[in-house]
Image 1 (tube, rainbow, N blue to C red):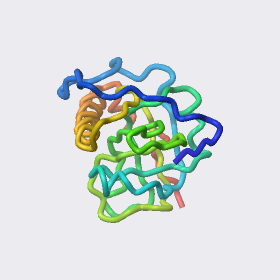
Image 2: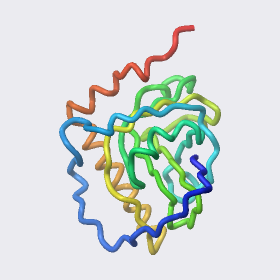
Image 3: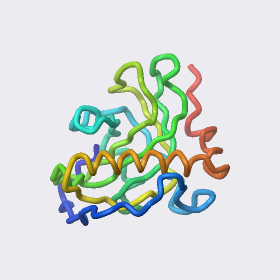
Length: 185
């Protein structure tokens, strides 16, 4: 979770209606600058709202791992791949992810956060485990919501768009990126 006190939480527009189709991909056929963006660090505890309140558990990287992201992008929702090292058997693969970078205006956060949702059912939590992520594209800007249900609906749409976007050849190749190679002991 990035906690940057010197930034003021900007006003995000309210979601009025979602025009994106859920069966489509966003962005070009392969990542373009500033992507790919590489992130890594031990998973930190966040606010605990993702899994409990939204049905979408998130993993948070430490503040010092995020300048590569927050200095070259805007707030919003992104997609890419992530991997948790030393996770239980079957849980350490390179997997699709969506990431929210912003102030979570629905929750009135005052500090910038980055929350990664890995699209996989993990057997157990992985706080303290090393996580690596490659951010490959942008889905949409950060929005505010009039209800939790509208936020959850958009999260589900974002996940489907991420899967469709990552299914293109120019993105699938990043599952084998050297960033994800486990260190030899």
